[in-house]
Length: 226
Length: 276
Image (cartoon, rainbow over all chains, first blue to last red; front, side, top):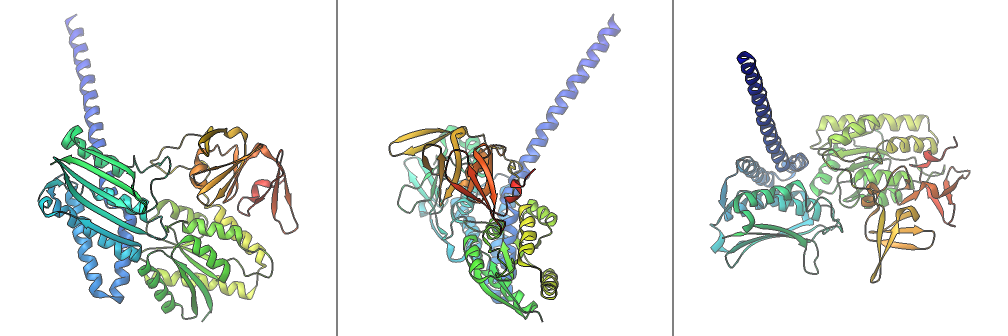
């Protein structure tokens, strides 16, 4: 019965191959979906079109300011596209990119958005995953300040605590809703956690909590080894 | 040149100024009588000033443009002496789901950045409608009814969950804090829920509780077959309704089986209470 055995072997190998090919295809599709989701979350169409609308309005009334805004947008877009390739950059560059983004948002939101960025000189050259803080700042605007009629302030700061680098993003906005849905487990937060865990394992963490003072809002604290 | 009055609701100051400038340039007879930055202010100013046209941004702090339009449809005076319900143009940067709904409801909308030719088209549509209104004045009430029906079709379906999100679990027990204790209230005993600022009042046969959540967050956790929204601020358990009374102006009021409260049904939800 040798031919039969050979045929069985042939078929089982073929089905095995088909199964592993299907698995590989699925993994590839998942990875592609993930990349697409990441890019879509970074280039949020609502943000992009509103920014372009502001730019269009500024060109007529204040061309100088329009040009400044366009420069911020260009740097922001370039950084966003490059950051999808999971590289690192100095903390000073991270803060510069956040400034580009916040300047854009400030032109849009006017006096409803104030900001304060604090980066000690001794930490400026530290390498960090590119645009790691971006989703946290976006969340602070989207869930913290945008729903708040009065708006508020965003504080981004870096500090050293022993052998740890502590980065924090704080807003004085709406605050975490009781039984908050979305903020702790949203795609942006999940993505930051995944990047941290891939790079540092359990040595890094991200925590979201109500800001501990009278100004209210939300505080996101990110810790990683120095 | 047709004279008209308009209100603009847009939270981004540059966009509000620019829309106002573009409108005044393209439509010399148009007077912008108010420009506000959030949905609540849009409702208040529109009720106070009764403009003929509303330009409502969709995403605004507090109350969205869509919610503002629906609140206006609930509160607009329906008597014959009042101005007709305003013509509404929604303005949005990007809302793929909303746009399909707008097309379906035959409501005009503008995409940001707003192009001159597109804005001119909107203006000429609005002028045509205003001209028709002035030549053959419709009674205020049918015009309001038509607007209500359009806006009703823009209400989210009770079971709607945004694509990519999981529907929330149905609530069975409400944990209501009273001082240091927490009362466990079964939803089966709730007669109705009423929005009260950032809280919701939970009314049962015996007493009432205050919970720290908004009606908007609570709604998706309630079974829409059993709990019916009857106003933007009221959700009633269908089994607890005894009767619906309609007065001569068409206003609808509910009585309950075991509670003296009378609940008003807004125009947006009144269609639920037509006799079979």
